[in-house]
Every structure is written in C-alpha cells, then in structure tokens.
Image (cartoon, rainbow over all chains, first blue to last red):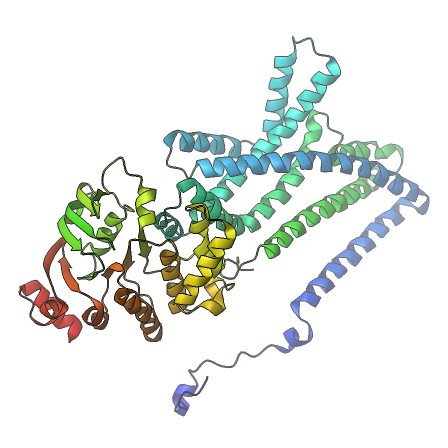
Length: 295
Length: 243
C-alpha cells in the first residue's frame, strides 16, 4: 500500500496482506525440492534395480550388462526412427492444422477428414495397415527383396508420423485460433496481406502458445515407436521383447525380464526427458512478456 | 490532405441491419467526431471506410477514388487510411519499434535502416523514444495506444480512423492519448474519431455527427450538437452523458 489513508481497523482486516513466504518455501525453494525429488527417485530406482540383480545372483551381472549393450543398439535405431517421425509429423501437423483454419472449404474438409481418420486409429493398427498395403502393392514388383522389406518397414514409421501429425494438427489449430482476432484486424488495417500476417503475426504467437502441448505430443510419439517391432523393427522395444523372452536361457525368467524392461524404461526415460527439456529450452528462448504460458 | 465521403452505405450481419444508409463527409484536414450509443453502428461505419467490413450497398470515396470499386485492392485502401483500435491491438510478440516497422518493411518494402529511422521518428513524436525495445505487455494502456498511433502514422496515411481510442484507458492515460490526438488534429490530419470524450470533441472536432440505430441523426458544429441539438434523440443522449 503506497501512501493511501490508513484504513479503519475493521476494514484493514479486509485489505490485502503482505504476501508471506512460507517457512518451507524460504528454506527449500522449489528448484532445490525438484532436485531432491529427482535424486530420491533415482536412488530408490537404483536400490530396486540392485535388489533385482541380487535375486539374479552376482554372477548374472554379466547378463544385465550384456542386455544393456544390446538395448543401446536398439536405442540408436529408435533415435533414428524418432528423427524421421518428428519432422514429418510436425510438418504435417503444421500444414493440416493451418489448412483447418483457412477460409477454403476444400482445405478445411481435407484437414478434418485427415484428423478424424488418423486420430481415431490405434497406432498399432496404422502401422500394420501401412506396412501391409505397401507389402501387398510391392508383391508383384521386381525390385530386390531387401529393398522391398526396407520400404515396407519404413512405411510403418511413416504411419506413426501420420498419426502424430493428426494430433499436432489439432495443437497447431488450437494455437492459431487462440491468437486474438484483434491481431489480424491490426495487420489488415495496416494493409498487410493475409499470407504475410499469417507468417509474421499469427504463427509466431500461435507457435509460442502451442509449445507446451507440442512437447507433450513429441514425448508421446517417441514412446509410440516401441510398437514398431510388430513389423520387424529391432528398435528399443523390439530388442527388449526379444531379450526378455530369451532371458529364460540365461537367468530366472521373471527377474531376467524385469532387468531388461527396467533398462529399456531407463533408456526411454533418457530420450523423452531430453526431448521435453529441449522443448522447454525453446520455450524459454522465445519467451516474450505477455505471451508466457502459465506454469 | 484528403477527404473521405461515405454515400448510402448499408450493412447487415445476418438479420441485424447495422448501417441503414449512411452519408458522412470528412473534409480535408478536418476532425470529425462520431458520437452515439453503443450498438448504433459507429465502429462498423469506420470499418466500412477502410474495408475491414465490406459494405452491402453504397460507396466510400477517398478523394476521388471509389474505394468500394471491386477493382480496388483492400490492402491498398488500408495503406492509405490508418486505424487505431479501442484495444490497441499491438503485435504482442514484437517490440514497440518492430511493431511500427512491420508494415513499413513488408507492405511498403522500405529497407530496414530507413524503416527503423521512421519508426524512431514516429515514436519520438508520440513521446515514447525511451520505450523502443519494450514489449507491449510492459507498457501502460496509454503508452500502448500511443504506439498504435505511431504505427498508423508511420505508414504516412491520408487519413486516420480512431475507434473509441480512449475507452479502455484510465483517466491519466486518456489525457496523454488525447494530447497526441489533439496535436495531430491541429497539424491538419484528416481524422474520423468515434469517441465519448466530449471535452476532446468540443476542443478539437470541426464537426460532430450524432449516430443512432445505423443512421446519422444529426450533424453540426460541436456547440450545435452538444448544446442546441435539434433532434429529440440527440437531446436525450446529450443530457445523459453531459449530466
């Protein structure tokens, strides 16, 4: 309160109180708390993991390390696949999300059909669908079998890109629609063309507003790659499955499987965590007063 | 100096007839104030002048050019006529300077250095030379509205339309925005101002138009409209707002 007349005692109870930081917050700011929680989770996870190794007996440690080694090979392949899915998915999402906000009925209709179709298919069905159609179409062609197989398998990857594209289209559309109409009014009133105003006024704001939701969708599409083993991909998910079902020959079946899946989960966590941190970093990089998304 | 002539403009949104045949003139270098109750179509009239809204019927002329001619590009019209909005509508993601530069760069295709010089010049003119790199959210309402005026001025318009420029402001900000507008008026800018600021209208306006239910009810000098209104509807409105 600056310079206002003193309030009578009965009213001063209603006046805004000085915000008082709680003792907990003063001594343990959230930044430190989050580290403590992460650290604790890591320690507990590690202890559980070691306990499981204990069940496996120490001489089975070589099994756990060997499994990790194979899983990391699959992890690289997963990264490769993700590096294809994210750009295609984002490109599709951007174009179709934009198409759904235009005045052109044909574009809007096409966008709606696309989103309705790909959003209502389970990703596993889409992978089969794309791969099988490609396989059937290529059956009679005379390209060599190895190339045929490669094309078929990559079509499964494209299926996932189309799937996440549908979700990202909705995110982009929501972002575009959440830019107030006053912004385009102002651009129109200055004689700025529709296309220029889209690229220089609407999209830069829509992009900032959609980043958190996009990060969410990125992490979910990264994990969807674990379905690709159904058409023969030896990516992280595929290798985990194979190792887990083979583990009976090396160790007790249940414990062996558990070790494999814990290691796989850790690797998925690493890539997803990095991706979400990157998106958060981009958010901070393009932060503008008045356009922050509440955290 | 340019003039705007509006002839027989009609506009409906669905069943709602917003403008029912409007004739208005803004003479060269003149400040015209448009007053009237909310929902009477004042804002729609302004938007018809720079074709943000396309009139259903009637013509709008800028000097001798019929803006409503289908061969005329709306973008061209809007380059000639500036507009200032009630809610400022500054581009949220751009700094003050870049707000002013955007249309210079991408509509008039002026090189960056020149556009920057014009932006600084216009922002200095409205007293914001120290806020060049601030973002709109960091400014008060009055400062934002002055940026919006500078943004319109930078395009070197032949006329400026003001759509209730002070209605979203606190009393102190109202004063600083009106001061800028008053100076513009005295400098001979052709202005059409939708406003409830009777003080401004009395001091700066050359003519006042009273608008109700999509029609011009009465027009005349500020004294005529505010003190000796001939029409019953105008008298009732003035009695309420002047108290």
